Structures are given as C-alpha cells and as structure tokens.
Length: 378
Image (cartoon, rainbow, N blue to C red; front, side, top):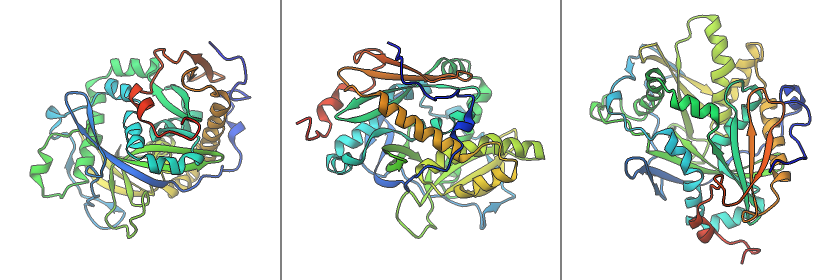
C-alpha cells in the first residue's frame, strides 16, 4: 500500500540545494563492541564474538606517500574465495543481530538513546544519494520494541549490474581485496601472499553515534588498525584501505575528487575513521605508490578542486531522511514493514507499507525470541 503523505523531500530530489544548510550535529562514533566473521561453508559465514579477524596496517615505507612499489594485485586471482553479492544481500542484519543477542546488557544500556539499527553501508549509501545519478536503492524498515531496524534490498539497477558482471568488473573487485592482504602482512611473507584471498573473513566494529536527533547503532567492517596510533580508543585507530587508478593528468584528478573521494569520505566520516590509505595502480593491477589521506582533509581537497560536492549536503540529506523514516514507520513489526525506494531521476522517495510476512521481511524469527527485552515487551 503506497502512502499518501507525508512526502520526502518537500522539494524535488533534483534540488539538492534544499539540503545546503549548516552541518548537522554529529557525535564522534563510540565503539560499543565488535565481532569477527569467517567462512562456514560455500556461501555462509560464521559469527565469532571476538576480534580475531582484526589485522594491523603494515606500511611499505615512512611518510604519508610511499613510491617505487611493485605490488602485483593480480596474484592469486584464479583461487579467489568469493562470498558472492547475492548471498550477502540475504544476510541483512543477521550478524549485527547476533551481536545484540550476545550482549543484552550493552544493548539495554544504550536502548534509551537508540532510534535506528543498521549497517554502516546503508548510511554510506544514503550520504551520497544527493549526487547519485545511476544506482538508486531500496531499503526496508520495521519497528521492534520502539526501535527501527533498517536493511537494504537489491533494486533493478543493482541486479542488472550483478547479472551482467564482466571479467573486468570481477578483476577490479579482486584487486581491492588483494590490496588489503598486502597491506596487512609483512612484505617478505611470500607464504601469506600465496594464500587465497578470502572475502568471507572480516572484522566488524559496532558503533553508536547521534546524527542530529537520531541515535544510531550500526555495524561497520574495518580493514585494519594503525599500530602507530597511541590510543586504543576505537574507532580512532582504524584505517580504510582503497585502490585507485594512477592519476596522470588534471582531468583524472578531477574525476578522483568528484567520485572516489566522495565515496571514501562518506564511508570513513560516518564511522569516525580518521585515515584512508590509497594504493595507486596501473591498468594491469600493479601498485606503484600509496598515499595516506586523512578523512578530515578530503573536504579541503574537494574545495580546492571546485567543490563538485558538499559534505554538508550529504549529511543534511541523511539526517533529514532518517527523521522522515522515523515519522513514517510508526507501527510495530507484527503490523507493518515500511519500504522506501529511490531511483535516479525520480523527484520523490517512494514509500510503501508491506505486510509483516511479505517478501520484504528481513528480521529472522530467532531474533524475535532471543532479542533483549525492553520493559514494554516484558
């Protein structure tokens, strides 16, 4: 059932200037827990209530820029152990819910402050929506004991891209995972580099933050930690690892600022990650240099390049949309699931109420039994 009112945004989605106000309040994300994931079988993952998958950053030289490298990202692609996207999508909030079930005391301490539970990836996607011209998204929300749970579903654009994936697409994806393997192991550890890259394995931090007036509990995969950071206080010690094509002219640098840096910023900013290490490669997957980019420096770089995107527009859109979702999703899980969909070019975000037992259901039955109970639910 489509909702008649209210609508979002009030103006057209094409009018992103409506979000060009002061930067909304955003509290530094606080780590409240963590867990690790490993491969269970062909396409399923196993939860571990510990930090076994967290790895250190291993720099390839002193200083923020390291040159004269020769890292071969193509190595081992024929034995890549790939957790395919279609299986990842079916996991929804599964492992974040497992953390909540394992840590009822921590969850209940935060409960009065939490309005939303989700993955960092969804927040990242929403942050960049004002500048999205080709992807779009579908997300579903249900309310459990007064708290909103939000998860992604595959839309037609994502499905079409997944089904038409080329060898080149797969290669680029593999290069990113291989770079992570190189940057978290000693350079002379040839035995480690010959091991298959396994993207089932990951370390996940559980964070709490407040964006404007919405308290969010969210999980976020972290690539590694910086052993040179003096504080143990996460997420200050975490580092994101990225790859990008070598920049050889001004046009390529503009493209890097317009697209890559916006995605890098959105992913790191929302999780409070202070540092991104980028490996610059050629078209054959050879990394010749790395650069350390502080997250807080990205807005300056972009401003110096003509301001193709504005961080405050991204953050205001996210803050306003989350408030809109909270105004819409008022019924509890046994009465409704709320589906929100946006397609590039559309003027409004579509909102539909779905049946609680429909194909849009994403909360597993086990969680409804095992979840920490609120005073109202008891």
